[in-house]
Image (cartoon, rainbow, N blue to C red; front, side, top):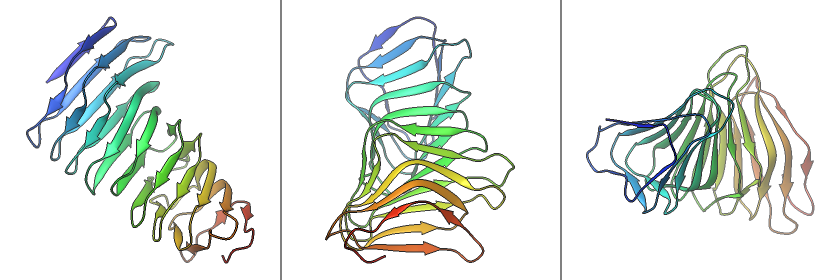
Length: 231
């Protein structure tokens, strides 16, 4: 089904309960659709935010948050789409798919999540991201002459043993992470399987040992503050 939003509107509930049911939300330029209650996406369903060019941001506001379950996908198509509220990875294997440039206000990776970014596009996470023990945030790109960019405006903290940021997918152009990645505790992991640049890596004093894995033939460009830790 498709929701075609040409003027600001508020709906109480948006829930996809059947796996494989996809929802397209087509929002006009400068318009906001607000969902009041907690929203849930089930199974392998896709929630696609179709931003219509026109100079203004197209906003999907989840007042109660959005939980991605199963292998579901939140997808940005075209540019200038924005999701406000908290997006939570409710299960391993969910994806935020930026086929167009998009913004998510708050990301809670309670489980493993894939941030798939198309060549030449960017995904911005506005607020601080905390990756808990044993969970993996994977930034995935596609081999192309244009770089994929992840903007972590509030930074990303690996806050548990084996909490991991994995960068993979582009074998042509170095991927870009704009913002600071912090090892909040010992035994955090930064796994670089594709050449990439990161603005800064910060190893928190006394409790920020970091395992840095760079694949053969790949290059990581960054500035690292080791403090009193082991890299």
